[in-house]
Length: 230
Length: 81
Image 1 (cartoon, each protein chain N blue to C red):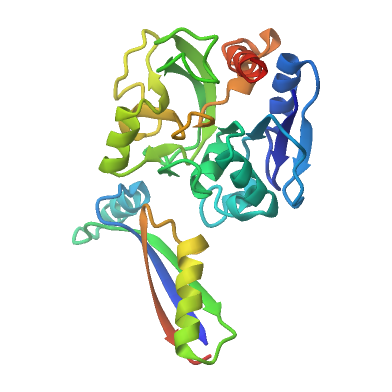
Image 2 (image 1 turned 120 degrees about the horizontal axis):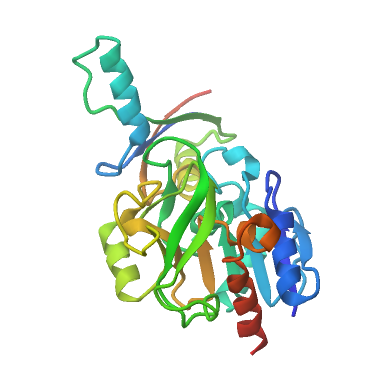
């Protein structure tokens, strides 16, 4: 299996993503610079977290139009799985691969802490190792993470089962108190219409090794690798 | 030609920055300030002498990059540079 991690100027979770991928795949992913128009053959593309282009204009807006993204969009539309974490999620929305937009947190504060998430479905490429409704702990670290989409888009996402993760409390209850950033419907991550593209604000790669204090993220990378190999 | 572009949040889109600004204005004693909404202002010199072509270029710039039309509206004025 071959994976590629795209690096934008200002990406800062690319190596964390590479370590988590290597642990799951057994081989290191290709690290691809944003200016490269060529993208190696990839079974999986990861857009890592960070602050691409200093979050100028809007988070992810500049990166979404970088040369390599034209190829990423083409591959994603052809069915290649694309995982966007944090800034990667913002890039995916700005590139039009996922609906909606990530806006400034309702508190206006940068929030860096562990949150609980409810896994909404287990029958996707990304979630086969989780149980449906399982509560997992992933860290968040963002200022622009408040998911917004208009009513019609939200209804469609809900009706089509495209909400991947929702912010919840330890017991899995989706409450206003457990929503860290004001996201509509407590949405932490969503799929595209073929469930091959996943964008999420929390960082599975940051709790993917016992030495980091947790391994809830490991199951996503392992499950994803198993799904792609299957 | 020179374009002056303003980008604003669509009505109904939550604007926590606008709310914070409003709170600060109230704290300064400007009790009459209400419904504060913040946005962006961008100036661009367009190498076009024909206003119609300049408008078309600016519109595309707004649609493709400068504004996210899911949440933002844009407006612009053109003047001879």
